[in-house]
Amino acid sequence: MTYRSRFIGAIAAVNALTIGVAFFSVVHFVNENQERQLEEALYREAVEEAAEVAEQGGNLLRIDPKLGPAPDDVGELTQYAVLYDQTGKILDRTPTWTLPPPALASLSEGFMDIEFHEVRLHAYLVEVPNHPGVRLLLAARRTDLDEDAASLRRWMGLAFALALLTTVLLTSGVVRRLTHVHQRIAEVAGRVAADDLSARVGAVSGDREIVALAKNVDDMVARLEVLLRAQQRFIANAAHELRSPLTALYGVLSQALRRVRDNEAYRESIAEALESAKQLRVLTEDLLALARLGHRDEQRPEPIDLTLAVRESVAALQTQADAAGVTVAVDCEPLPVLGRKLDLLRMVRNLVENAIRHAPRGSVVQVQGRRRAGRAELVVADEGPGVAPDDVERIFQPFFRGARDRSESVGAGLGLAICREIASTHQGALELRPSVRGACFVFTMPLAEGGSTVLS
Image (cartoon, rainbow, N blue to C red; front, side, top):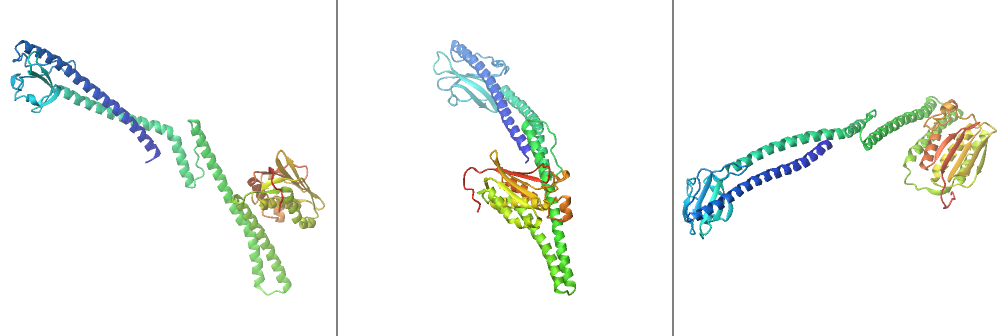
């Protein structure tokens, strides 16, 4: 059963119970009222008849056998009367008793119902004044009263059925109107589960909560679509980048096996194969690093000094800087932070290595670290050609390489993507700051409050 059906059923059940109780109360009230009127008429008639019997000697009835009391709503009722002495002997009775009346011993004082040979009577037993032991039983048929009650129950039952049907129809309409947005959201969720990422709830009207829910669902689906598209592009790019060195490696090894060569030729083939294997290793490490960055929750941040990470990274890249004819100048004050040591080392090394690779021979790569507004700020700037305006928004995307990098087949375009992901996992940010000359990358993250700042 759907949520909408359960909702309609619950409301209909509550309304049915309410209407049923109300109708039952009406039927009960009307029947009680009619029976009370009959009893009041019987009582008045019985008292008057008992007084008349007492005046006539206490042994004879003075009742018209044709008609009995005439209450307001039950009409004239045929009257039954019996006069008993103190022993229960019948002194007199009306001709309406076609069969022997009930024995006095079977009767009780006051009002009662009597089953008289398939005829239901409502009766009242009263003592005749000044004649001890003499009793007068006055009764009237309940036929009209019972028929009225049955007719009232039938009509009220029909009214109840119509009211219940109307309630169900109205409730169904109202619930469908109130939950149509929920239904659309459920349909969109089903389509998304079936790989239809174009499904959207769209513009809706209603309560602010419902409108906000619909918008959030559309935003979530749109975000999911972007992430899946990015994942597909990432896989396609990774396959492409892996194919190039694999193809080169396979070609070199295949050619080396085709014919016998001298040692120098073999050395050249092995060197080419090693270069391709090196590219594969670097690319694989970058891919693994990028994939693992989102799953490092088990590694707790530790207090470290970002300046020591800078100096360690620069020292590891000194040979590369010397070969490129580039000087790396470090000007950093102590920057205590809470972070993952290996990740921060990798990020700083990627930024400095990227600056060395793009800096012209004889230039200086500036690495500066400062404290600003409770955050550590690290700036890495080079004097190279900089980033083309069209590439500014794309340089942090995985596998993106500028025109110069593509022409020189440098890297796979994962370094800056890894750096930005590391910055994000440390509650920081990495951006390209406008610069008159070269490229200027700025990394910021929160400073640590107290604690050790030694990087081991």
